[in-house]
Length: 388
Image (cartoon, rainbow, N blue to C red; front, top):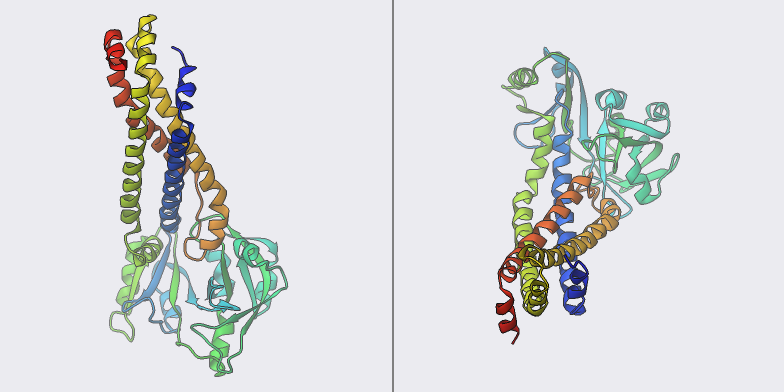
């Protein structure tokens, strides 16, 4: 089989081949990024622990629960430990500098979330200072924060009465080995928030946002959730317990059915680029009728003619798709930094790369197989008549 014909035929019309290649590159670039967004949204659900349960208000996630509930939940059969978890909702310097901040029971944070690993600083310094905080490594990188640095936050949900800022001291930097814990978050002492409220210097809702419950080993989480819900069935505030995976899925649903949207958009992109490549291969095949006729006159088989055309489509598709995938990897880290607060764990994974290559391969096969088959079935006489 004369393989040298494959690149030569593609270079007969370099502009047409280049435009088709770039179209493929843009399509695969977008498909990889869109798929990575869906994977990032689903990462928290997949990384959820089966022995952690979230207890929230039955009315709304934005309705806080009484602090007294914590000790009552701790007494429920099957509960190993319970900690408060309150969304702070502040921002750094200006509203555009938004990242997640949580007030927690700091002494329980590391035992409840063993996936949080301190990589710089000391957790003991964090526990010893009420104004101290720990931050994720991606947050530290994004804003150039370091150990001992002061982070002034303007309270969104809990503004100071005097209009001042909250001052937090970075005691440690953590990295999470699970996508369930965002690496662009700040954790601080709930006692600091509570004391400020009691002193009257802070506005904001009383109580705790949600309670995180660790289920005892061997206990059925569903049974524990049922007991907790039954305990507060008559108030004063009814609760709704759910697994950590279900809780994470709530946030995915808040932004709509993104997988369906991305799937529909990706399908449209795939169809559009497939038609474009089909058109390119049909034009290329017409121009190669004489070459195929000469090949057959020299004794080459129909299969050899078929593969010459098919390999052109595969080469074009894989080159364009590969370029798009490389581009997606190149912007992955900057996008992860920019989208960390909204899509924690965003990355172009190895699986996404493989999917992108398979899509490129499929486009090449589908686009080139029909013209390759039609051209390979022509006899030598037919090719000469068509050329004439």
